[in-house]
Length: 131
Image (tube, rainbow, N blue to C red; front, side, top):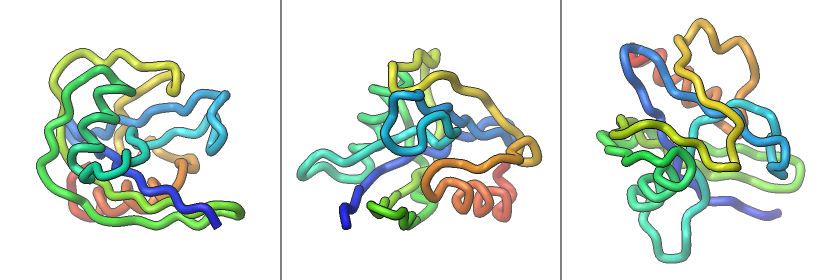
């Protein structure tokens, strides 16, 4: 089974979390909302990967404050290991073509499935009182 190793950002402001809608052309979870982030490059650290991915996807600088944790998603034909970092961004969001839109959500507005293991991470952020 294929295993994807990823670094992802939980970007929080005023008890709201930034979620991105994945483009319809994406092979995994097309059209789903998710936390922004992506795969590690060979030899890359998790913190360097999340900064690079946020710059590529959102066009902003990500400032990680702490690692929320490690989450595992098991699909039918792949597994995704996600290391999720809490932080904020500097700059105006400018999405690349991997994403269709972004929005700041309050926890109680997220009444839909999220991509990968992101629902569990969002629930953990809520339990901690961050969103």
